[in-house]
Length: 134
Image (cartoon, rainbow, N blue to C red; front, side, top):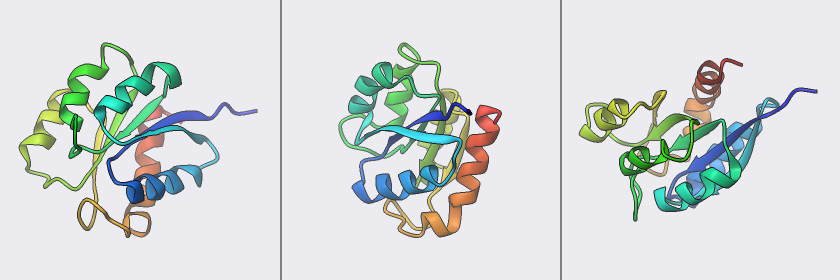
């Protein structure tokens, strides 16, 4: 039996958490272990869930994705794939890359991209497989 890779989804939009969760759950090699609405909540869940990979939004209340990245390495060696509505040339994207994220995927139509599944699902799954070497 194949051990599924554990995924933590971090996004402040409940709609985006559902859409991203649906994309991940279509892959038999992946399993969502938890969802978080911001960086603070995600940090509290990282230790208990021990994800293999974190799907991370950058723009969130309480603690954004960049600040999360500054703190997460104290708790986890999980890989991080950013899924963001930020502009590719945004300073936040550059900061996230500088903090060692393993990849960045851009939401096609803003922070709540209902079309994410149609437009980016294969790219997200392919990126997860590449990052986790599966």
